[in-house]
Image 1 (cartoon, one colour):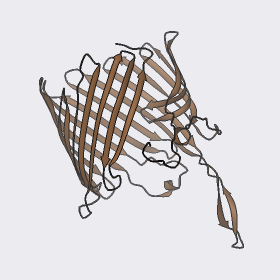
Image 2 (cartoon, helix red, strand yellow):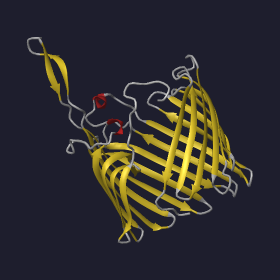
Image 3 (spheres, helix red, strand yellow):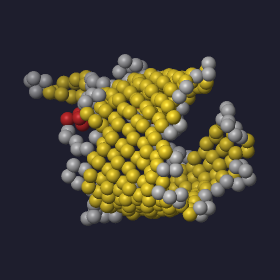
Image 4 (spheres, one colour):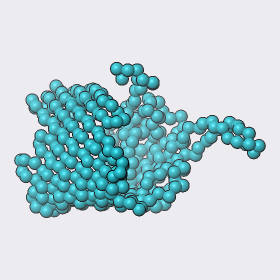
Length: 351
């Protein structure tokens, strides 16, 4: 914050800092350090090791490390026994059109101990050290992807909570190629709330939600692709719906979305465009969105307007520079403006 000093300003965050070796011995990849985690059942950052083996259409991945401290400080956890994440993924590609995967994750997190006033048996206030047990996520999941070229594509996943011993999520997403220029889309999602096992929130009676969405896309070659979707969400005693329409072209995209029902009422329109010049040397981009929303039909409306403008400069294949300005305004953030600058250096490229 250049314009005005804030408490704890400046705060540096380290999101990625790791060493990676690829195709070691022709089949192994290893990452060591602070790194992102990408598996279907979970994500985030951790400090540790990630080892993956690939051979003849099979892959086996395992990871272990400590949870990242608050604000992504560049330090390791001091309690590896209670603050860790571990798991793995086994994936098989028997054919080009079929992929199967199985995942496991165990994430343990222990809150910091703290002192608090409590009443003893004589009803006198005393200071007590509160030591919370570790809160856990422990899931196993499976996923499948299948494609029949020129006909359809479908993906699905299933998640099971090992702590609570119940189904956590069922998800199916697919697209049918009706003609060369028309596609039909479908989506279904059953989801239980993801609550830490030893959290106080686990004692509440939460209801699951089910979501279904259908849509159509129509492509006019060399012009644009137009799309429309309708979604319906069923909660325990309520429901909500949404409508999305828009178009995408080689120059950018435009979309409109409307939400109705229990999740609130929303109307939003967004426009984004980007274009590359001089064989990738310059890529300017600009976007704008306007949204009006309210929590219920009887509530007051709130408006949000946002702009962004940026420029990517790539003078060499291994170096790029990004500059972006962002503006945001609503009743909470009045005229919020920020500038982001990023430098990328690629140690190897495929272009």
